[in-house]
Length: 255
Ligand code: MF3
Ligand code: CO
Image (cartoon, rainbow, N blue to C red; front, side, top):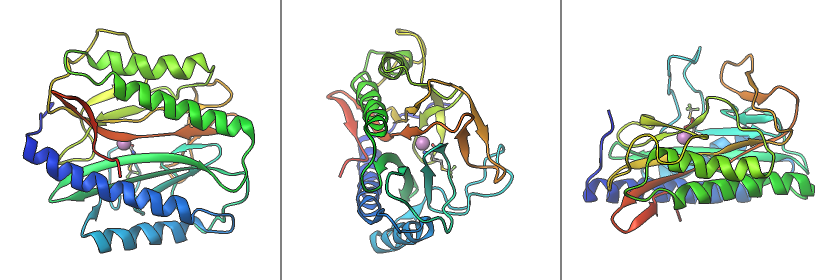
């Protein structure tokens, strides 16, 4: 069931989204060579406490997972695409890190992700992240009342495929509201003019993922959460929670 949000609900979601953006900024600054993934998760936990928000991820237990999610951040390094679990690993110069974070205030969620380089990264890694971010921007630009869900999917896909990157099969964005994952599912590939008509009050997390080798394949690691490429090639992931409004798309997870 797709639930449209009122103006006052959108205002609360904007507050949650601001906390998500502030936390992503702080974690991005702390993500230097030598930092451990668990230190970054601790920093995000401190930010939640300071801002009076709650984690969307901690203890989240969808049917596909063998155990509840144990952290507040998803940290996916290099060949990890999404849902990497923070551990004692230390970041190294040249690593490509996806930082994904969700928080709720008064029960309303925000969900966003960035991909950053640790220290100096090679040009190919920068291109991969940039293309993914451009795919997100194209998806957001298509999130206009009167368009259809397929227009967003198609916009995302077009940027990723033009750069000859893989798009992990089956993964995509989702509705956001009083649950982090609501209807509709938003595929990262689709046909223009197809699917749900976009109406003011619809809130979506748009989250392109790209794979450097061009492969669309992925595999689940033994931890039951981390989704990785099958060929060791690197991945990038960007995400914003946005609202469709009469005045065009509004990014709820902006600073
Ligand atoms: N942005 C990710 C998603 O929508 C967040 C996953 S949270 C987790 O899939 F708790 F499931 F890890
Ligand atoms: Co999401």
